[in-house]
Image 1 (cartoon, rainbow, N blue to C red):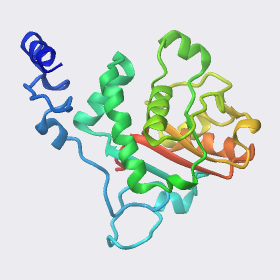
Image 2 (spheres, one colour; image 1 turned 60 degrees about the vertical axis):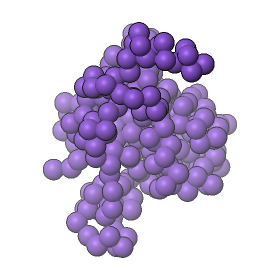
Image 3 (tube, rainbow, N blue to C red; image 1 turned 90 degrees about the vertical axis):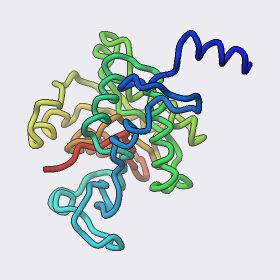
Length: 239
């Protein structure tokens, strides 16, 4: 096996998937400089949505957004800040199907979940669903893959059919926050047989305004879910 690895490195020298800098064998797909340029979301943060807040590190505070409009989910956490190289690699996974990046992201998300979430309470991992037509057109479900891989790493049950998107919605990317909430209103439906009396870990790639996660959490709660916890690979910094 060592001979095969040596031959593989000779023919296809390992390189950072972002900047193409040479890598030594060791499991990393990004070089040290690129990893250092992908900042993690750390304390102090909102105890509800996980957004960074200006507070003492030992304070338990809700951010102004969660105080003004409490979300339907109990907790949301993200491993990285959706800026610079982090945004670049997530877009590479999402739009160019770079599978190795997806596996790296799911490993990153599992590490975040172990450190920040009450895993012993979670019964089920569910992805934020794409509309069936959009999934067929894309031929790829990025949130579905992240949820499946993260559930496997955490050794938790995974059910991609517990939640579905019942109507086509415009992309959230270019919409202001109020329009995002209107855009996804009544866009989802949950199966009570799969979610009732369960604590659900809802998985997506990026948390921005929280509108999509909130819409999903409302439906899950209305269908009988005990609690909804949100996990994403990254979150967009607030202005």
